[in-house]
Image (cartoon, helix red, strand yellow):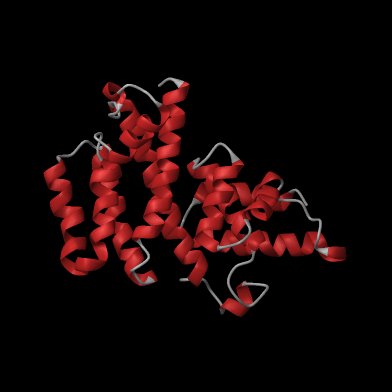
Length: 242
């Protein structure tokens, strides 16, 4: 895949992340998890090149039947806008770039590349729901989160730092910071600064390393719950470096 086309596919993945977030707004967190499970199954079947009719029947129709009006925008995002080679959103990107309309469909390799990115994003979305609610973590939120509230900006940055190492969501830190901002509401430029050097200890005072280790152990507990061994190996390696 030539570099210019690859960049367009990355841009398509970024746009998918934004539209997915918008499409999921009507759902509660528990409903989101259920919907994401179906969508993850759908992209896995797409990667195996199963028939679209079977994918729709097994993975999309159950969402439409159960959630009806809530799933209207999601249906558009999952089907006509993104998941198929004749992607409406890719067509719009091609037109914006001024390329020939004959190049407006994803070829097989580009489509596979996008579906892989989309699957990673869906997994990321599901995992951040666990992170936000502390689902399945031992102890109370007060035991696990230093500010006794939602996760700190540092924790979110660390989480996506290690997730990105495993899933390769983005090569550049800026779109990753944008995605975290979109999911959490934290300041994008501050997220970006942390992502440039996520293990930096400045700002924690005299007990900076102790505090950072505590943050890393908290993030480790999430990846342990998610059974992501590669992430655990990376975190353990960084913990041993102090």
